[in-house]
Amino acid sequence: MMSPKLNQKVVCADGFSMSVQANATAYSMPKMTGAPVYTEVEIGFPSAKEELLMEWCDEPDDPTCTVYGYVPAQVVVNVIVKHGGMVEGEVPAGIPVLRASSR
Image (cartoon, rainbow, N blue to C red; front, top):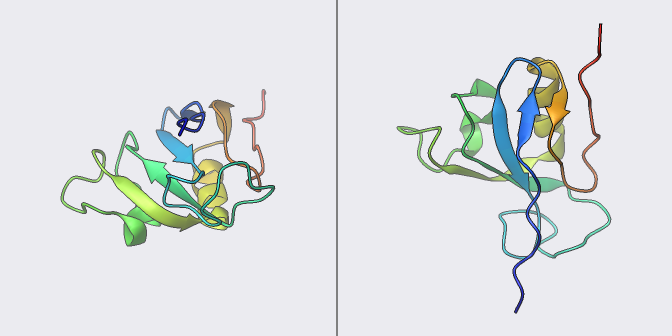
């Protein structure tokens, strides 16, 4: 079985970053690779503790060195908006690509 392609790490305008994945091997819904829309995704290794994500944290004592399973897509959107939008990276299908505005 081939490993699914991983999305590039999301980097936000304020420097916050996180991995956002959804596929057959990730903690995501639906649990399949190539779904047209994902309602829940896996967050991995954020660059800083993010309170909006802590409900899904596997290792609350080490929030930057762990994964966050089945995070609702809207929570991911809220985190990206909170940190000023994306300047690089990829998100799974079903999560809007919210680019940082250039001022």
